[in-house]
Amino acid sequence: MENLKDKKLELQYPCNWDYKVIVDKECNIHDITKGVFGERDHKVTKSNKSKTEKYHSYKVTTLVHNDDDRKELFEQLRKDKNVKIVL
Image 1 (cartoon, rainbow, N blue to C red):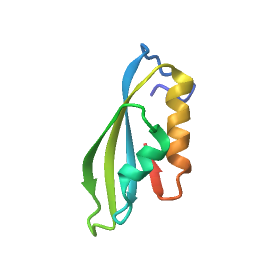
Image 2: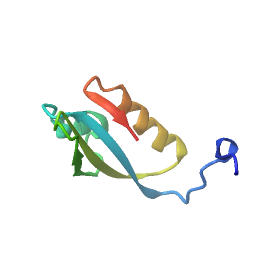
Image 3: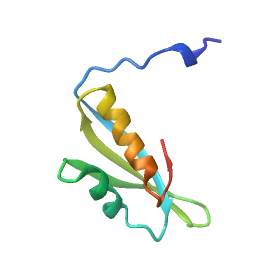
Image 4: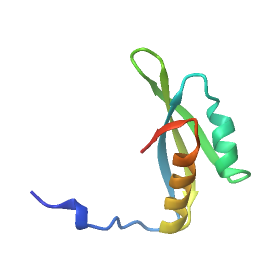
């Protein structure tokens, strides 16, 4: 089996990137994304909900310009107190 830990993701920038964001059902995903993306174009699509419906997941898509841009958006989403998980 190949060890993927040492492999670097190779992308052609700019490109569209999807983040899977999981939040409590009471949270407004649009408030969260507005805080992270501001006026930057992005699309939010409802993805799924947990079996108990306590959590909802969303696909958030935006154009990323480079590796640092992609990682910075991930970190900003992850740091929001209402976000449980970002994939």
